[in-house]
Image (tube, rainbow over all chains, first blue to last red):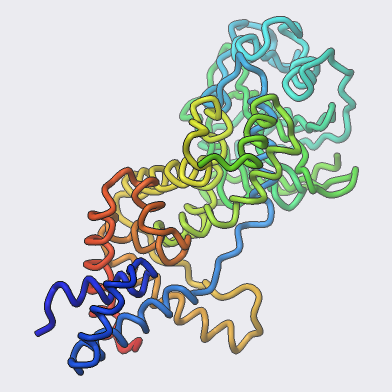
Amino acid sequence: MIEERTLQLINADLDGELGQAEKDELEAILESSAEARLMKAEFQKLANLLDNAPEQTPPLDLSARILGQVALSSKPSFTLTNLFSSFQPATAGLAFAAGLLLTVGFYEISPRYGSASDTTSMVGTMVAGQQSQRAESKDRLSFEGSGVSGNVSVQKSQGMLVLNFELDSDQKTEIEVSLSEAGLSFGGIAHVSTGDEAADESYKISGGTLRVVNQGRQAFSVFLPYAANGKGSSRDIGIEISTEGAQVFSGNLRS
Amino acid sequence: MVNSREYALVERCKKGDRQALEELLGQYERPIYNAAYRILGNRDDAADTTQVVFLKAFEHLDRYNPKYKFFSWIYRIAINESINQLNRSKKQRPLDENQVAATRGPDAAVEAGDLSREIQEGLMDLNEHYRTVVVLRHFSDCSYRQISEILQIPEKTVKSRLYSARQLMKDKLQARGVY
């Protein structure tokens, strides 16, 4: 039976934490005890296995995702908690077809800039913290069928793409947006009041894909900062829409 | 002892210097991801946790006390977030099916992947206190003192947890015929 003291010395030796006196003590024990030598060899083998276990490589888009989100939190009045929350607009009752209105959430971010109906300026403010530039409309997709209809468009402004969704669905709808493949990260999501609120709204980012689940009449914008080491100026953003597990639409938006 | 280079980087980050952020991220992304992966046993969770760690760190840089090493501070956030993630998951997910060494050839990768899986399973058998000290010692190459600083527990406790964890892992891996 090996004494506790011997086990402690063996372990501390593996960790390079023994002083000279303790090293001498362990050496004397090892010389006189075959059992202690065996135990030391077993612990040494375990330590070698652990120390030489293959290192894991982080996902290629991880640093870009992190930097993209950090960029959005650079304004002092803005907290990351806000970023992950659904922004609640204060202005309600505007016509659904009139476009997107993003208010309270972004007023909290930067009350000095932008108007309630100017999504573009809010994006510019968030990214650069300076006066806005006009957004450039890039592409638009429309879809209709199986109880889901609507459209999604993409705008480009100051290092960020903005996807504007307008949907009407009878059933629970899952929308998937492939971000990492397009060299994009998730920056935030803003739901817009339509006067007929969508039910069960939720979203999740996983494996470089944004999944938004909701039902009813809905309008929301997704903010996508370019990855720091992203692709060139043109990107294809994959959009898939499913209801009850069945795909009803699949297409690419070109930015 | 303050690392003046890191201190300068942190100060630049506080002023919104993106290049400094990228430098800190470049320095710590991989080790933090690996520590999270070894604690959580799942790549997606490790990536999500790494993301949260850096966002929290960058958001709360003003709380970092330069008397301590930045390394210890960010690792502490990483360990806490990993344990939070473990608790949120409640039941741990199965290990990734395809964990292989990304930089090796196909045969070596399969062999290394099997061994890596055995080691990860051995780690997942440990409770979170034991697993954490093993990860910090063997995967993050921390000394007793650094582990003590990160976990804010006495060095004596670090030693005792490490000894017990190794004994348990050795017995389990031997029982599985790993060695």
